[in-house]
Length: 263
Image 1 (cartoon, rainbow, N blue to C red):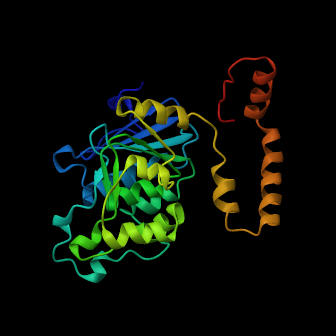
Image 2: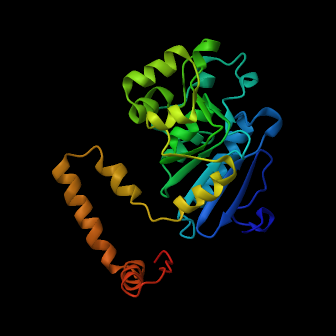
């Protein structure tokens, strides 16, 4: 595994996050342990910067976001919200800007996977929701507790949560502000898999190593079915011009592991 200090182009010249690249997987670790990884303005700016640096990097084929084995993220740093005006808080709809880490994660070209251990509440839960997939350890808990401080989820929680777990369950979580554990998160489809905390990162890396058809799933979901299937067919055919397609078929027929290069 590459050491984070060797990552000159993608590396951790940061204070609130750590970054490293393991093969074709970029790992972004939230790192404010003294604040349980509460997301402040500095962390937002650093996450945004790190993601923009790897967004069009062909050597990065998947992205993992996690907070370490103890905690994912304890929401937004509420100390920074005191005294803000509505216009200071507002983020224009559908306008990616510095600090909008939720929009940045959701719009990444590469597949994104959240590895959640410990609490993921408020903005932390929303960050996990912005990822394509979510793996959780047995210690993970999720929630949108904003109602308890007089606000509502403001980084996609009212929208992405309903699309993932269904409208009724999303309303329950948002209206009551209560946490759910990992087993309940798995039952309602909030997470894809629950694993022991000691194997969470390695399991997530294994998922990240698989080729995922992100673009087709995301873009085709809102299309009429016939048009979406035509788009899928065209994209499928276009892959037959790639070296990876030729390598994958050859490796299968020769009963060996493929060596993909991203070409």
